[in-house]
Length: 352
Image (tube, rainbow, N blue to C red; front, side):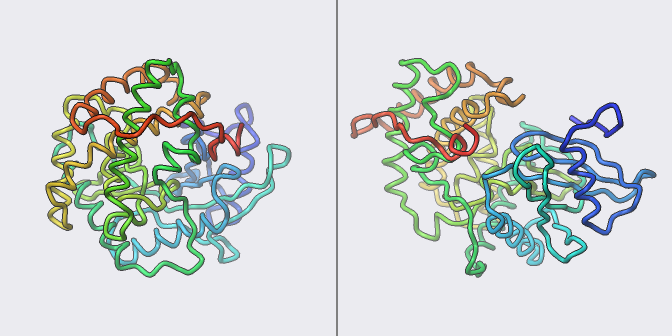
């Protein structure tokens, strides 16, 4: 959605975007257009007569500290400088800082703002086999870069493990609070989650399998520019299993019949750059299942967003057949189901 700013269509965030633009060496006649209102608020900035463009991201309050945002930008710059991936390049403000903090004049606490050079391209098609092979190559390059990169000592990002996704301290809220959750649905998901937990414990968290990942490589965060794959929106980057990046590429359509072939294509591309044995590839289904249940939680805790409304209770209900298929392949849990946690997730602690 793009909403050009005008005197008849303004909001407090429009004014913040224009004030933020003045923090950078941009043309005086800059025009701001709203791209997306989700957890962050994103604007496109461009000169009134056309030409250069930039993406301005106004961060939500409370999800990431200023240090965590600086950590994201440090990784982006390292990826770009090394040539490991084509990623957005942050722009320094007039004061030399990448992160600008602006008062919101009654909209809430001050917001951190970051400006990026604009990236051209198109979102990959869900059935693009060749595109998925390129996505696998891109992920492998990023993972190889992480294994050789010396992070700054102050580096700070979320961890996405079982506890912080489906467990007791979830960043995106409890999956049991998913829209339309019934007792039968909760029982099926709980059993699948139990198997996931066991299998993740077996995989472990060694640096060869668990490290810094993008964490949200769904199609909406990828751009194809001719033969170049560009990866955008690192807002959820953090520490998790490398194979989680594969699972995120099929977010919101995990049940589609073409998904197994897309995952195979991703794996073929990955092997052109990195190592992925057959046993690891067979475990991708565990991460797809984890991601699916995590998105049930996300939809429940973001019920006021357009995406959550479009998915709704049908996404929760549609998770049950996937759980049954997963359990038929990987077996039933050898542990009793977890009691529902009463601890709020990070999203709920911030917003609810």
